[in-house]
Structures are given as structure tokens and as C-alpha cells.
Length: 84
Image 1 (spheres, rainbow, N blue to C red):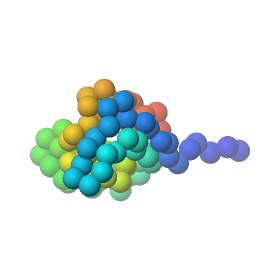
Image 2: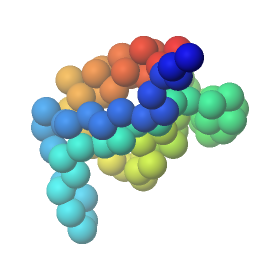
Image 3: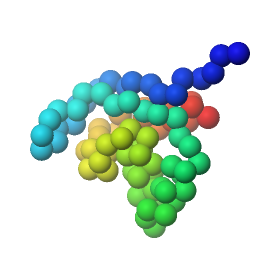
Image 4: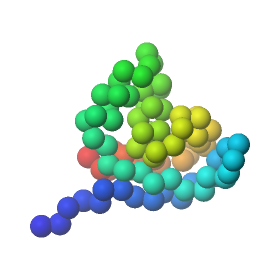
């Protein structure tokens, strides 16, 4: 029996610059129920919850998610959906 991948690397189309470095790729792990529960408690809007979930799954600060180009944001969302 083969199991689905636990994570995938995603190369950003538009790298994100932080105070300390340039982020060119993100490793996205499979979501767990715990991630969704934490995200649901994190904010009032659906967008805040989505940012929290992506930051958890990519192991980056929420500021990195805020600075993603929309093309990368949508592709990362698509990848997370493909895990399900």
C-alpha cells in the first residue's frame, strides 16, 4: 500500500523578502484537524483563518503569507486542497 506524500515543496513564482532573507520556496505539509481548529480560533474573518492555516502548514510567520503574490497564494491553496 502506498501512502500519499506528507509534504511537498512549492517554488514561489514571486519570492518573498523578509527582514533577514529571501524566501524562494515553501514546504507545505498535509493539514491535520489540529491545524484547522487552531486556524478557526485565530480570527474573525475567513481570510484571517486562511492566513493562519497556511502559516501553520508552511511553518512560516503569518507576515510571509501576507506578502505572498496572489498567484502563489492560490497555487498553495490548490496544493492544500489536493492533499485531501
